[in-house]
Length: 331
Length: 240
Picture 1 (cartoon, rainbow over the protein chains, first blue to last red):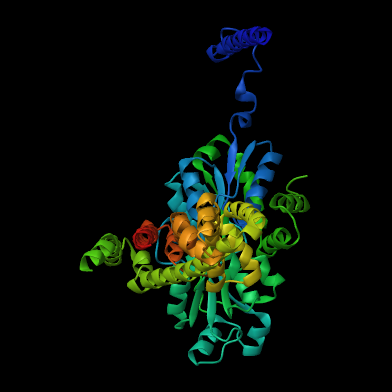
Picture 2: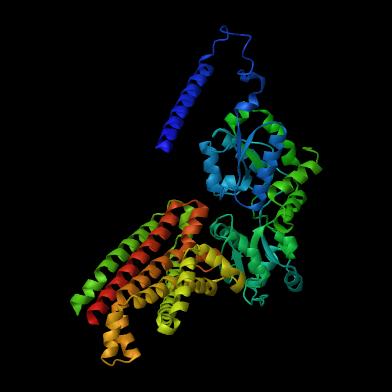
């Protein structure tokens, strides 16, 4: 009985405190009229610091490089006093892009080539990096999305071989590879000209389909698997060639070579932060914070960052922080 | 005979026709060039046959091994080991199928064989568990009286225990088939092929038509197989 009484008392107390809270909150919304009490409410006035009202939600796709890029943006924005929300790691292009369009996130880093082919749905690749960037930037302005400055690196698709094989077979370019296959040269381990590829690359016009058309060859065997496993498949000699990305850390770590794309097939994939116009209107300084960072990211810098996360046990945020401090963007 | 055949095949044929209609429609009316270049009859048939092979090999293996091990563990001498194995199996079932694939990826490498092996292990679980539970739960007084009539343990197993436990064993196999169709779509991640090729490629290309074809084929395969196994089950019950 005693417990019941206590409970009732507690409930009553809660009710009273709750209603006080509600009542107490009310005037804050009502006091809008500056004439009312001009001296007494500097605290409620948000004009002092516009950043406080607006949180910038930073997203990214879910592989190493975008994760690091996302952390770079978060750390830099936070350093300049802009509150951020970390929504990095949003699956693939589709998910990140839709989140940005819906306004669930305010920023994520996108690749020019991906935007052109995959998001805008153009079939014809643009091979000049700068031209492509301008085209993509212009197209997205109509969508209320702003492309900030583009990175120095070009993380495009690459065809890889094990270095020892490439040297022994004398293959340096994709043309060399096509010739070897077409003239019936015996393949390195596992003995067929097989190609490990992610799902996307295997079926895209700017992927294997277009590549085999331009260079006029076809692999004897196409092994489609998760994107991240192609390096391992090549390393374990389960395929003789594999597709990958040019700035990926595995290439150096596993001693692969990128075959030179001598006919310039692969479209440029430079990266830039894409920001919602409304976020940029609220906080125009975002552009000044992120632009120098993007410009400083050369292929070397980026693959260095990637390797730290992939092979040296760094978290993306740690690698990003170390790099930003090293380059003097934050302290 | 014709009557039975019609009964057996009517539902699967209707479903297969519906699936074929969707595939034919999609191949002939692709939404854009990307879909047209990817979604061909050859590609669809390849994925489907790879998928069926993945399932067939892993299911046959799992059924044989699962039922035999289940029977073995239900023998009186092994009963407590059986209880232990059942507990492990129950835990094993909660491991996501993608994790099972990933686990064997590091041991067996990429490709079809790894996918088959992982599916095989994953499908054993419900079959083994149901076989064990079905036999162990046969009323002991029935076994007593069979023994009293002078039946040998082997005859008790084949004449009493298995027929009584049969519906439970069969439902374990059906569960395994349905799990297997679903899990087999994940084989594509490790280069094992199958209908998952269509689904994952469709997702990464952002083309609903390809995803739809993959999803419909996987669903229809699951329904047809479940139906056939259920039919086979009731057929066996009548026969036994």
